[in-house]
Picture 1 (cartoon, rainbow, N blue to C red):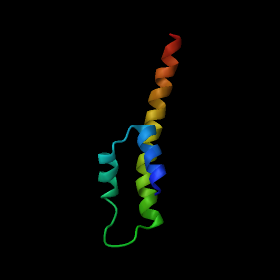
Picture 2 (spheres, rainbow, N blue to C red):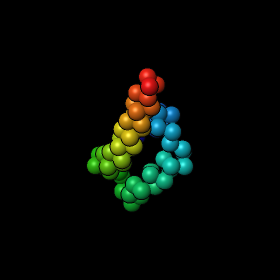
Picture 3 (cartoon, rainbow, N blue to C red):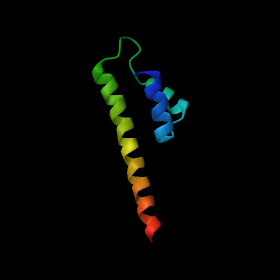
Picture 4 (cartoon, rainbow, N blue to C red):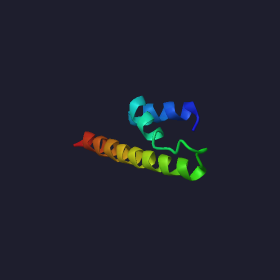
Length: 65
């Protein structure tokens, strides 16, 4: 994953570099990471981003009340 994508992920979802480091540490160190490894990792981040989007939408919908 490119550094600029990681930076955008941090900004978009308020992930700390420590959290990203922890997740990257779960990747296998004994071989080159596969597309499947990255897919698994990005899937977890996508779920977190989806949760954040839903949270922001709930917040926005409360403005009219």
